[in-house]
Every structure is written in C-alpha cells, then in structure tokens.
Image 1 (cartoon, rainbow, N blue to C red):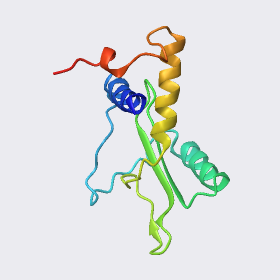
Image 2: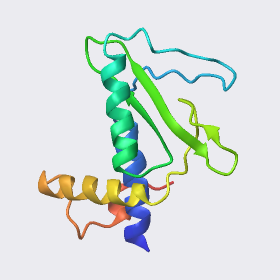
Image 3: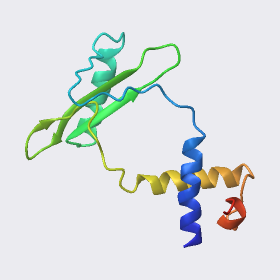
Image 4: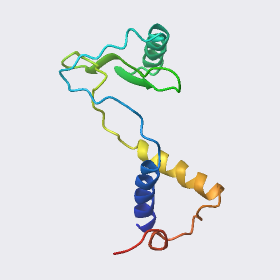
Length: 128
C-alpha cells in the first residue's frame, strides 16, 4: 500500500516539474481551425493512419514543436452509438495508462540514482 501511495504522489510530483505547454483550452462551442498550419495536411494524414492502424473509433493529436505553431487535430467518432464526431477538445478517461507512466518514471529515477526501489514514501514526502 505504501508503494502505491508513493507512486501516486511521485506521479503528481513529476507532472508538476514539467514545463507548461501553451495548449488552448477551447470552449466546446468554439471552432478553432488549424487548417492554416504549414504541415496540416501531413499531420492530418498521420493522425488518420494512426486511427486506422490502431482500429480506434477516434483519435486526437497535439503537436508542439519549438519554432513551429501549435497543431491540434481530431478524426473519427467520439461516440459510436450517436455517431458524434471527435473534436479537438473531446475528453478522455485516463484509464490505466498512469500506472505505466509512473512505473517508467520510477525506474528512470532509480537508474539515475535519485531514489531506490526500497525507499519509503514517508522518507521522501514531508509530513504535516
């Protein structure tokens, strides 16, 4: 249980250390258009190829590169029953992907000698 708590707290700590991206948070009624992006066609094709290869009903992709404008795209359906189109601001459940992220982050920190697998959460997180 302590390990689970440690991994949970560690994941939030690691996420808070990353640089913030200037990602727009559009209102659902907003219609932001990235079609003028210089690589819009290329990125749209890549997103569609990914969706087809993954056999996913829909997908959203954000590309942020230094020196290039932000690009966000969506393809497919967000709800198959209602045939709702995927939007760039569609919300997703995170599911179990955070477990993989935390495991990789912990192992990278162990590899960098920043912590040991035997470390206790109480020794890493200040109390009260």
